[in-house]
Amino acid sequence: MPSSLKWYASNVKATFKRPIQDGLTNVAMLTRRQARRNITENQQVDTKFLWNTVYVATPEKVTPLPPDGEYKSLKTGKIEKRQAGEVVQPQDGAYVGVAADYAIYVETENSFLYRAIDQVAGRQAEDAMVGLSTGLYVGTEEA
Amino acid sequence: MIDAAKTLRDYLLTQTALTTLNGTRLWAEVNEPPEEAHYKPTQGAAIVFKSAGGPGLEAGDTVLAVRWQFKVYGVDVYGIRNTYLALTDVLHDVRAKGGILSSSQETPGTMLQEPDTQWLFCLTYFQTRMRSRLPIPV
Image (cartoon, rainbow over the protein chains, first blue to last red):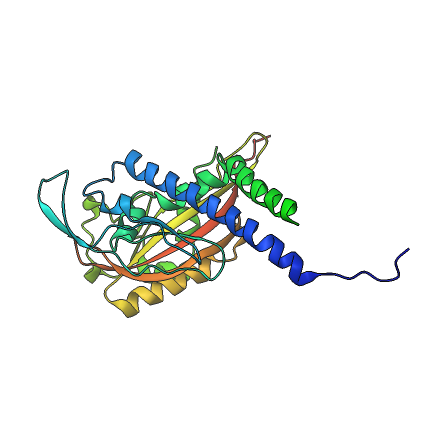
């Protein structure tokens, strides 16, 4: 029987960091996809700027965002100015955000983002966990 | 099934620390004060709230958890903030009162401005848990 156990904490952290990050990114991407689906189902698409500015930010990258500028309204046919706010990248994990500066008003009228979180946490939780466990499995193999 | 919005409104209307500020200008399940109320911020504080998510009920669940979106209006920033603070005082950490089993503030208030009317308002979110059914009379 060993009299002591050497715990390679830094090795364990290093091994699990990547798969956990990948799992969180998977969940964030599922939430982004569901939020976009909700915007469409809620009939909140006009210039499509809002839809296109639902993003996922990780420590390494941010999903592509459209440029600020003038966009044609599908509802009125008029040209509307659209602007995105600041995008913040996390140090760990993943953020789901909406960069359009008017997104909060659309969200308060008929939730598309929080509802997406509910939906992913409920109906799609199984998918999300598959992503997470797959990531952990890869980590275990590497170890 | 209980009417969660009515239960919450009834509870808030019993809270004099709040109603001394907004009176009965408290509307449920709307995004802004209803037109027929002819509300204007110069009249004083007003609150609208509506359900904004929650896990829903699954088979066997007897507790209904609801997330609520609140918008607090008022004459100016200070009035709005006072009403928001009073709302938080009476709705955060409620335990077994007025049909509410428990409650908590989820998101602290953020001051915003309505794009159409330019009215200032404070946006905040709470969660409540209530029994999903009224007791059966015996």
